[in-house]
Length: 131
Image 1 (cartoon, rainbow, N blue to C red):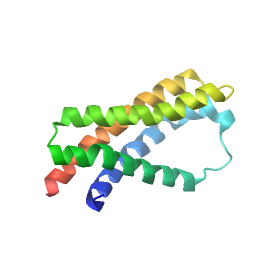
Image 2: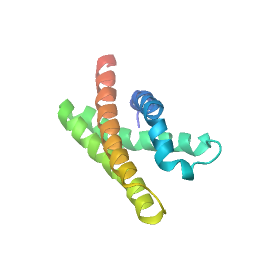
Image 3: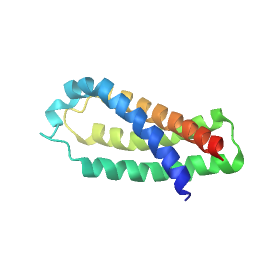
Image 4: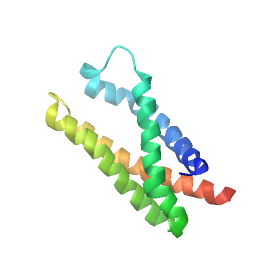
């Protein structure tokens, strides 16, 4: 995996997700506050982002660079990857956790699709710009 591709994917994802979490954090707290730990454990969060970025880079960004896909194809491929990943998390929680709200499942899956599709497009744009 190309390190430039990886970094060009990680940075937009992190920026977009930080904006999302700061703007939606109050909603998540109202929906899931009863499940929140007293403090955030950042180690698993960082590990998730590193692994997720590797997946997006390997399965979406690198093939898009190699094949020259349009931004719409890159967005759709990234969105599908994000939907699958976020659906795995949210639908598992919805199926197994008491009081997991349906609204969280729906919004989080939509966000995962949008975040990943948009992040993939931005990263391909950055890579192509600096080639």
